[in-house]
Length: 598
Image 1: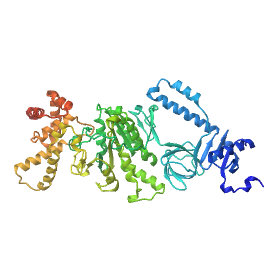
Image 2 (image 1 turned 135 degrees about the horizontal axis):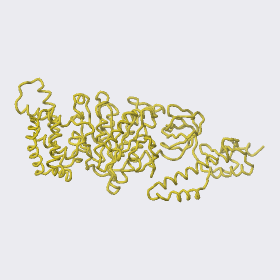
Image 3 (image 1 turned 90 degrees about the horizontal axis):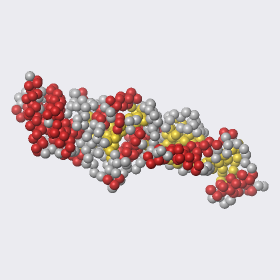
């Protein structure tokens, strides 16, 4: 009886060798000796090696032990060489090594050393709807990228005791039951570089605008830890949106997260787009993330940005409605990784997530397909963490870390104005304030349709220039009193003079806050408009003429008194003397306007 037969097979190390030509007895003994040392068996006799002839290997061998695989096949060696060259290419594309690409590639070829490295391998059990169940993985990590036989990549999203679930970044193609899966040991990431500016890319960083390939200078993980308290500094530098209703009452600071919330077709995207347009010349990079939108809608936004020369400092990351749910799920994380690349270079970034409602729906679809327990509204229990770990990455870094910032404008779509629904309340509790757009106001022609009562900025005046803070004055109170008084007096005909003036002033202010899309105002224009209106200089103007009056008076200031706007923009302050100059210029303009209208 042989030695192997006398041993308990269940306690022996099981290994499988696939090759084209069967090995000699001496080679088999060497394999067993290697495995014995690797897996710490008592001796080589404790290794049970099964040899299989497999022409598909092409050459060399593939040695499998449990979920480990030592690939010394022809394709495995080719893959090692490709990885080495790819790393060299990435190193050569970095700024310090540019111009040396030939010598770097030559060094990489000369230094290349083949090795039968162990890889984690698994087998596909089920596949469908972009979800793959894999068995055989013992040491795979959450978020790890895995590679399938047909070249498609996936990401581990569910780990159970006997299997793991992965999401696919492409169509299933030829993946089927029994397909081979290899772990890469790498977390999902996105290539990054300054070359992304002006481009439209997908959730994996691949250009989809028909342009040339983008040369990457670095590679960042899509999931990254948020900066700690010590690594941040206070949010006190304004990020002007150019929208009078927002900059005056709900100011946004660099590093803040301000939610834009409202029903569909109430102007949410328009506000975000105008904020991007207003960053021209302000040393701020903008990233627009489209999640689950129609391709035609995204194309329209790109055309708007191009028409205003805003694509020079912008990147559009698009995951359309036709993309698989996994790509819609990772799109905002990938875009934030790109934003972090710029932030750590000391730059300010504005990122728009349009919208996180569709992002939550995509994640819900993935979770249900992965077999997770549904909770409220069928969302999984970690849907809050889904958005909190995303938005917490937005910050203003300390000066020691470069002082860069990421300002977020997440968008949430409500149903019939219900801000108390599950996803809206989740995101409201994560962000630093919200701009609530009301459908009734929108249909009344008040655009942007900002509800003054439900909107708030928790950073407040800390993110306003002193000039804007002083010019705003009692604007919110005046508007609130006007709306309340308007309700109580709509059926009354006998009003005293003070009430009539208050209603007239409120109507003028409401009209003044209307602003056409794509027409952001400079800080000085906003300050001048508010000062003139708040001091009653427009109360005599018919409501329908307020916007024309504003346009003409701003043109008058630019033509006759350019030093006033220049001083406001330069200093960011509003002295008593400067305020007096603005009011005197307004008095100077009034008779000219009346004469022109006569």
